[in-house]
Picture 1 (tube, rainbow, N blue to C red):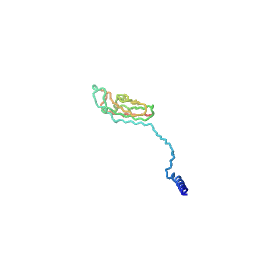
Picture 2: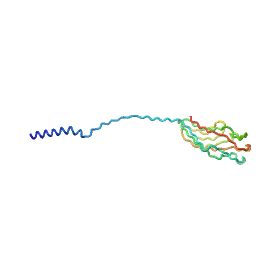
Picture 3: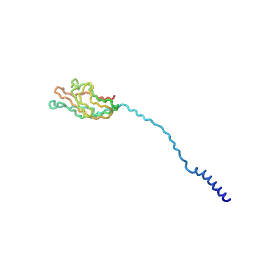
Picture 4: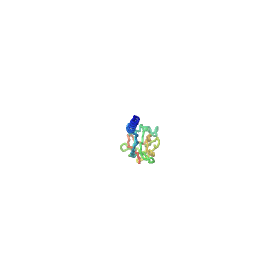
Length: 173
């Protein structure tokens, strides 16, 4: 009978072990996941910014026999054009004078002021009371250049301090 009790005890131990051991072992984890999407929007509008490093240009007095074109004291005038637009959209910089150079009732026709543009897209020109193209580019970017201003000298000018206002216009459609 001892053998029967021993077998009974072993059977009991096996039953206990088979029921308890799995609960002592870590459970197999079953992977679970969930996903969500995120849409990122960015609104990019057109922007134009113009920087001119001076707001005054002065032509000194010079002998017309010695100097045919008087360079401005402030040359070179540094200009930075910043534009954000479409990749094939035109960007233009224009210059317009609000009149002739005047001193009281005396005047020097504005066409006697010229400029030389340097830097990619910057153009040479002559001041006018109508808008004149001074720079042209395509698409977004930052463009830097300089303008050198000159006054055609003449014995026919009357003495005085002449003045005119010139406006730069940066256009980004």
